[in-house]
Length: 93
Image (cartoon, rainbow, N blue to C red; front, side, top):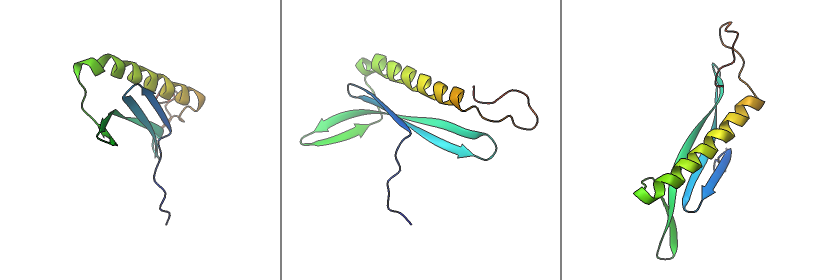
């Protein structure tokens, strides 16, 4: 058993707003992605992360979310999931 910490497939950061994109696998639907958004802050000498956002964070959060969407879309275009149950169209695109 390894003691390695899992790392995101990709990270995006604009100022204090960050997105961690996680790659997941499913036997039925192949690769799918989830995104965790956070706001970085400093309390004394320590850095922390919060998952709540102020009004002034929202525009930057939307831009980070847009970049996350585009990155995931490019991954799925490059590696489309195989059709499921004879369906002729790939899923997740």
